[in-house]
Amino acid sequence: LAYLRESYRRVIARMIDSYIYFADRATRLSKDSGFVGFIIPSTLLNQVDAKPIRRILLDKGLSTLISLGQGVFGTKVLNTSTVLITGSLAAESNFTLGDLSPRPLQERKDALNQVSSATWKQWKSLVERDPHLTFFTGDITTTQLLDRLRHAYPPFQKALEDKIERGVSPDIAAAHVVSASDVKAKRLEKELLRPSVSGSQIKRCHAWVCDQFIIYTTRDSRLEKYPHVEKHLRSFKQLNTCKEVAQNKHPWWSLHRPRDPKIFSSPKLIGLTTTKTIELIYDENASVCVTDAMYVFSLKPAFDLWGTMALLQSKLFLFLYRVANQGDARVIPQVKASKLETLPFPDVDSSNSFISKLNHCCKAMLSLNQQIGTAMNPNDKTKLQREIEATDRRIDQLVYDLYELTDEEIKIVEESN
Image (cartoon, rainbow, N blue to C red):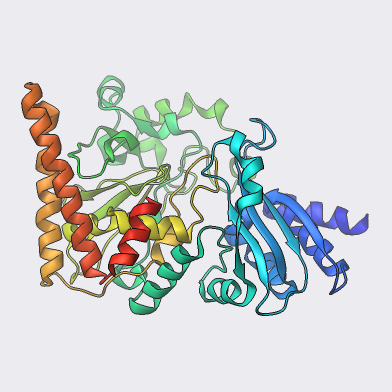
């Protein structure tokens, strides 16, 4: 009981999922030859905070690992569920491994009898070579492909100027994210305004415009110099329930996390966080500021931004991300920067022929999407759609060639997607 009380205290203090402590305790209490079973959230598979418990479970050994998917315990249980059974295994022993999450809910019960298996030694080796000790539950051939490419190419992090950063976090979005009409009607002082884009603007190879502004205030902002902004922010003051404001860690008018303004400097790429696919736009010179629903990053000068954007939004790169991130283990999708940074990325500069071709295809796709958006004639729309699909296939093939995938590996990617 004392252990549980202390675990609960630490959970509240650090906001870590409580199942980590129960899994840890149960695993430590069991005999080496004994078995312990859990049905727990699938964040176990890849969440950063769960990495230590994954290490403990690897040392203990697993006999079964199955991702059941969402909805098993009803719609009110917001996370996916995983069945996990620990137990000592010989290196060459088979253990049950499966991912039922893509299947319709009504089919999963029968599918439990059809899950595959893998040798414990082979699977454990793949997990231990992963930078996050991710517990892979999908077809082991997909994990092997990710592993091979990681050993053939450096991580994407090597191409970054710094690292992938989330945008600013306001305590109340409506207070700090304003429209152009609000700026005009309320005469908000331009010195505190930063151009921004809404999430709906961030679509693969689509044109975009700055459709909103962020009131960029920090704890050092002298609000008395900006009476109209102060009046606007004050109208939201009573709605602010942030604990850090109550504890005087930052003033009520400040952004919760302002971030370093330098991360928004152009040129950079902007990605949408809350999506199941990788959606990017190229901010060439607007130095757009975004909220934490988006992420931003800049590349080293040697890398072509248009070509890189095409590569990152290709079928192969999405495949690698989904394998590394265990598909859709969250009910609310979220692109994780920590996973993107570890994915294999060819160390090629702008002079590389593949990159120059990807640059051309990405710009062509942008133009085609603009044209189809304004086309009125149905025949024109059909023709443009065919060109878009052909260009898409061209991008995917260029990326396959750049990574030197075999025909069998291309088949794995195509079938997975």
